[in-house]
Image: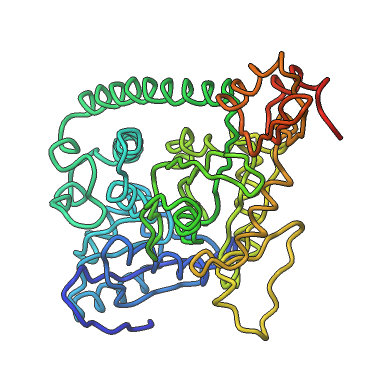
Amino acid sequence: MELKSNEEKVTRAVLVSVNTGEYDPDASMLELVELAKTAGAETVATVMQSLDRPETATYVGTGKLREIREFCEAQEIDLLIFDTELSPTQIRNIEEETDVRVIDRTMLILDIFAMRARSKEGKLQVELAQLKYMLPRLTGKGMVMSRLGGGIGTRGPGETKLETDRRHIRRRMETLKEQLRAVEHHRNQLRKRRKKDGVITVAIVGYTNAGKSTLMNYLTDAGVLAENKLFATLDPTSRALKLPNGVTVMLIDTVGLVRRLPHHLVDAFRSTLEEAAEADIILNVCDVSSEEASLHLQVTKELLESLGCRDIPIIPVLNKCDLVDGGVAIPQVGNGVRISAKKGEGIDQLLYAIEDNLPVRVKRVKALLPFEKLGLSAEIREKCTLINEEYVAEGLFIDAVINQEMYEKIKDYIKE
């Protein structure tokens, strides 16, 4: 057991994990510590037990559970957080043995979601995911329900909703689904409008805490919440960004990803992640100062592919290069761009990389419009990007970034 210091009165937690060899337990535990910190808990100690498989009744062995109980009594522990998804029976058995409130990894993530969601859609998604998760855990209303008085793992729908009967909860879930369908319909309409208007979208995705919001703020002064906590952004934010070549794109910040995120939580936030699936270009941001930078890039890439993003240009963005010592090799990832969003380093190279991956429907051209076709210049100003114009003896010389529709109209006047 690794003991941590206790400096202020907050929720005192012990984090518990079982190493079965299925994944890197140390890395997962470090992430759980960050998740607990984000939720407002102080990690007093971490416990890890190596087993061929978790115990069916109590997750950890009976001897280890007894050790945990004694430690909790001695250190006045408020909360046990398990680095897995526990069954209702396991939660009940562990609480009865330790007399300490128990939550699992999924409950902790849902709690952070509830704390961080800002938009109507985000709040609806959080509540629906929480109710789906809690419904099978309402049976009996023993220790599990008696400990829902507040604190980490209980934010969101709240005590009154969770203590109503199952029929009411199912009715509430149907209402939430209807409201989400309406919100998603509105979002789809906005996407279609953007496509119709020729708006180019660039989605910022990546592992949580990789610096996505910091990059968004630097590029657009969007004022998106940017702090060193997991899941700092739960709602997509869209802002216009003008590239050096004059093309304006829509930059979208999305929810971050974590290791071993339960699939039903990914589904709950699918409409948010679909912003990436509908994008023209994806920026896959990773914290290059992390030892698992390459793994984070791969996790994100695989999820994007599962959402149908195989044919979308993906630019690996190696962020936080300023935190890497000179002697440490930064991983070279394909067409990856090294930046520091905090210090603004490498941003020019990133913008040029975005330009290089613009969809073919947008082109920068120079054309000489005859006087009888000057009406086209007004259309270019309204629907495209006019970089420069100059009257000459033969008509109007323009330098513009145009879409495919406008290209067809002026292709006869384009100058090489």
